[in-house]
Structure formats: C-alpha cells, structure tokens
Length: 393
Image (tube, rainbow, N blue to C red):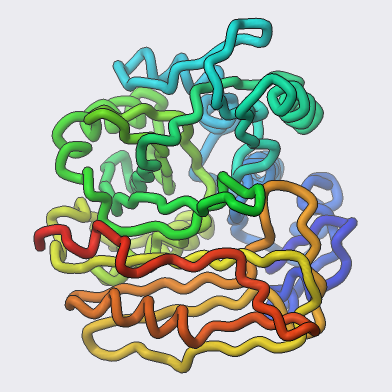
C-alpha cells in the first residue's frame, strides 16, 4: 500500500503508487480518513518511511487500529525533539555538540536547525551574523514548536553514522559509516556526497561509545525497531547530535543484507503484520570484515533534463552495484534551498579491492545532460581521495 499527501496527487512524483496493489490519494496525516479506509480494506499492518512526521502518523494510526507498532510517541519525541535528545544523551554520559542560545556571542560558523525537524529540513550553516539572522528565521518558521538549536558547525571533523536493530530487546550494531560532504562551491555546503562503510573509527566507537548507546536504548524501553545515531568525530572524540527511528537515506539495509543475509526491512514488515520472524542479528564487526561499501549521491543543478545516460550493470559474484535514478528526461530541476535535489544514488558493495575502479566507472558513465548540452550533476566523488579504501582488512 502506498499512502500520499493530499497535495501530491501527481503519481509521477510517487512512483511506488504505480506498482502498488492499491494506492490511496489520502494524506498520511489525515488519521481519521485513513482509519476508515484501513478498516474498509482490512489493512493488517502499517509501516512508515523516511520522515519523523510519517513515523508520528504511523504511531497514531497503529494506535487507532490496534496494530503492532515498533515505537511509542514518547520514544519518538525523545529523539525528534533535539533538546530532549541532548538531555537524554547527558543522562547516559553521551557527549553532545557545544551549543549557543539566541543572543549569545557566537563563534562562527554555526549550524542552525529546527528543534523538531530532521532529514536536513530547515538546516543551514551561518558564517556571519547576517546569515545567522536569516537562517534562524528559516529554522524558526519551519519548527512546529518554534524552537531552534544553534550549535558549533564542526567543519574540521567527520560525520559518523551508526545503525542499530533492536529485536525482542536484543540490540545489534548493523553498521557504521563516514560521510563525505560536498565542497559547497555553489552554496550547498551541507549536502552529503557519499557514505562509506565501515567507518574508519568503528573500532574506537565500539570501544568507547557503543555501550553507552545500548544502555540508552534499553533505558527508553525500546524493544523492536531500527535506530540511527549521528555524531561528529573530531580530535579523537565523538560528539552526538541526532538520533532517529525512521528509515535512513543511505538505505543501510543493503550493507547489512550483503554481510549477513538478513534484511531488516523484512523483519520490520513481519513485526508490523504480527508475524513470527526467525532472523538472528549479530553485530556487524563480528561478520564479514572484508566487505566495504560506498553510497554515491548525485545532486542536480538547475536545468531541464534532456538526456540521461547510465552505467551498465557491473554486479558479479564478488560485488554488488545498485543504481537508483530519481528523475526522468523532460524533468525540470529547480533548487530553492541549500538542500539540492538528489537525482541519482549508487550503492556499491564489494569484498575485493575493486571499489575504486567501480566508482571511476560509474562516474565516467553516469551523465545527466540539459537542453544546452551541459552536465547537470553538481559534484562527483573523487575515488582517489577515499581514505576508507586503504583501511586494513
């Protein structure tokens, strides 16, 4: 089943509806209408995608229908509200990012973001007072509770993401990744150009921080579900700034599925349907230590797409390549914020030393061309600059 917002009736923007057994033009926030339709159609399971607002409405809908749900509203609010999350981290000795209050003397740059949004919504980096005032208003306007977080922008460290699955109260670390950011020459400094698995700092994370995170997840009573944690690594320390119970944009299930044979989406679906599930989760570092992965993000600059050229399938027994193209010929790309439109994503998984060659091949054969013959891809990863490729196996 695919549920849509009422103001997004253009199915070309929600292509899952074309392949769904049934799709409804009902807003995912119209709980009363969904309850009636779910009962009429005898829906027996609900699952949400890539936003906290969808997760919130999943909880409400499951509650109304008496269906299984991995999460409570109280648990969601502990991580969605960034102030509550900071307090939660402090309770378990988890280090947060240094922050300011509005009116403080600020040491720029700082990152300005709504307390209660995620997925880069309303988030901007201010390098001076004029930018700060403008970005503060944007974050304030986009915050449902009208609260804004102001934190040090750590531009001399690495963003690290951690992925967990909790099943029956047992917690497994699914993977760790580092983020490669765009250079930001065209005014998009917070775009995540790539994720690399495993993180270069995985061993230190497991040694110093993993136990605290597990205590926190147990402490909030989480029994089932997928969890992400995000931190900056700087000067040999981790500074945590976000957690979430939504599916994450790098589709980390591909990495864990490749090294374990278990896809946590299947486990989530079984749980939502109240079905038994025999999946046994182990920590990622206990599994295939030779596997590396990179997820390449390609963002588009403004223009009309005339031609799309994609690489041929390069998967084989020792590697897997998954390509996703998010636009079609004839589409118009128009960016109004610092979060540019993602036009393609490629996931590469490999047990050998061919990652650099695969990245080079994709970069050379993926082209999004406008009606003037110009390339619309904003930035590409330089395969020679990837430190994780030189990590010891």
